[in-house]
Structures are given as structure tokens and as C-alpha cells.
Image 1 (cartoon, one colour):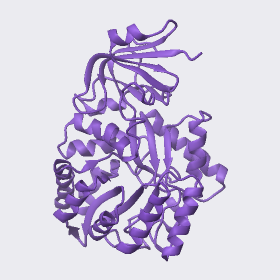
Image 2 (image 1 turned 30 degrees about the vertical axis):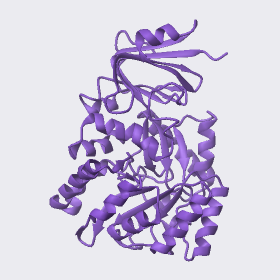
Image 3 (image 1 turned 180 degrees about the vertical axis):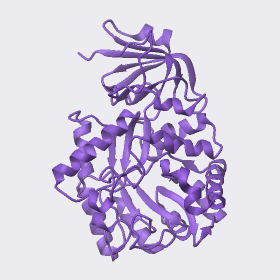
Image 4 (image 1 turned 135 degrees about the vertical axis):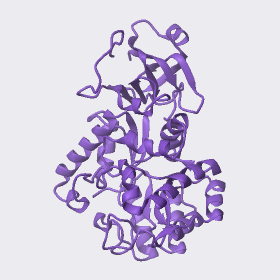
Length: 409
């Protein structure tokens, strides 16, 4: 018989903007939320023997979702060197990175490019509870042009036939999504520049058709304006970065943005803690344009999803909130930011009916923090409790001292 768990907090944020319940609670049975609402109502539904965890000075909200990570990379070292070594060495390091993310309240991640498809093995281990970690979706080997961005991961394809073969091989290995490097990137200096396209519109069409036929959504790494436009025309499901770089500046075609909205394509800016150095890297004017455009896209109806690109140089696996603060810098409300980090990020990963909200029937993925993140987004760093698919995880060491009146599960 599964023992139920009742978790309450002084403030409950259900996920969608406006979803606030003072003195709220959830009832968890196994890996599912069986009730969510006002504490008095949820208490009435709790069966005898229910365990309790009460946080009257804290906030309860859905587990956070990171739509763009690279578990195999090393944020403090060289990405090429990081993916060398034995499978055992690499998967152990990946497991450590996943656990770091869990400790920050991230209960679902999408790995958008690993080495030797090891994220699939880690996904199975975490799903079975053999190692602690968030839910993992794996894109396995990303498609890139010969010598292109992240070619060291083994995904070079130079023809339509090679494209189909790699997409099929990834699907057979258990991929949850298809990743394509539609443009170059700064991680591979020897490859095309960030604004240069790596695939033609026709080749992107082959990728999308093949992946969709196998039930895989397509995530397109696209910095360049031309690459973004081609990816939209091809019908990708998410655009990663969407920087709209064009030569030495930016160019944002209104027609392309309109199509992104019309086609329901999600945009994951993949912003890490590195955003604070944008001005130093690109100049203050271009940095200001980037953040203004981020807010403008949201206002135009573009569906934004949170992601950190964790694993690339400087993008730590324990700094999820740092990336969210870029949205605040762009002028978005904390309520909207939390929605982007939960509801919308889950929907971008095709998990809207699984996670991202506190509602009966959904996976028991939740987070308790001290304080109220609606008043101060930094409160998300004061993690008290994390449940991932119903499994309690309390970060060690606890980043904040326990408060009187709060009990652990």
C-alpha cells in the first residue's frame, strides 16, 4: 500500500499566471498528485496514515523545467575534452550534473545533445529511481553539417540519405526529440559562424519530415536570422536561442515572428548566467536590443520556454535561477517568468499533460522554497524540498536553516 504525502505551504503557486492559493497544499500518492487546493480542503481528503510536510513560511510550486541542457559537457572546462573517456566515466559525470539540477528544484530537463547517446541510459536509471535526478528527455546525437557546430558529438550529415539514417538511428536508440544545428555556434570556432546557416531549407524539411514520421519533435539550434527563417518554414517544433544574429548586428523579420506565432513554435532562448556579460561581449547597445526583443516576442504571442544551455562554458548546472533573472532584466513580471519556467516549458517539451502544474492527475513534480518568489525571484534559490515523480529529495547540504514550525517528509 502506497503511503500518501501531504505537503502544505503558506503560499501555493499552481503554475499558470494568476494561480495563487494562500495556505495551499497538495496530496501525493505514489508518483501522482491526487489533490491540490486550499489546505483545509486537501486535509479532508487525506487518508489515515498520511505523512505531512508543512512549510508555513514557504511557497509551494511546480518543479522547474529546463528545456535546454547538455549533461555531457563541462561548464568549467573544454566541451570536446569533456566527452572523451569511457562510457562509465562520462555517464557518472552526467549523473552528477543531473543531481545538481535536481537540488535546485529542476524536475524535468531536455538534453539537446550528448555523447554516445548516454543520456538515454541515464534517463532510464533516473526514471527507475536507481539514481536521483530529474525526468530526462534526450535528443541523443544532434545533426550538424560536416565539420559543423558540435561535430565532435558524431552527428555530421552531408546528404539527405545521411540525414534520414541518423534520425532513424537516434529514434531506434530511444531518442525523445531530434536536434539539428541549423546555424553555427560559438562553441565550435572552426565551424560556421553563429549567423551562418548549416543546412538548406530543403535539408531542414527532410529532417522535420523524417523526425515527425517517427514521432519525434524537432529542436533547431538557430542563432542566425536566415537559419531561423528556414527552420520556421520547415516546421520545426522549437527554436533554440533565436538570437536573430545577422552579420555584426540583428535582423528580426516581422513575417518570421508572425509565422512562429501562427505555427505554435516554442522559442527557448537558452539563457544561462552568462547573460550578465552580454554587454561586454557584444556591446551594450546590442545587449539592450536582445533583452528588448525578448520581451517584445513575449508581447507578440511567441511562446517562450525556459532553458539554460547548462554545460557550455560558464553555464553551470546549479544556476537555473540566474538564467530566469534575464527575463526579469527584460522587464517581465515574476509571475510570468514562473509560468515560462513551468507551464510553458513543459508544453514546449510536449509534457503539458504530465508536469508543469500543480493539479490532480499530474506527476508529483514540485518544489518548496522559503519566502515568496513572486515578491523576489531569488527565493527560488532557498530550496527546502523537491519531489521528482513523487520521490522526495532534500538537497544536501540544505542551503537555508530549517525554520520553526516546518517538518520534513
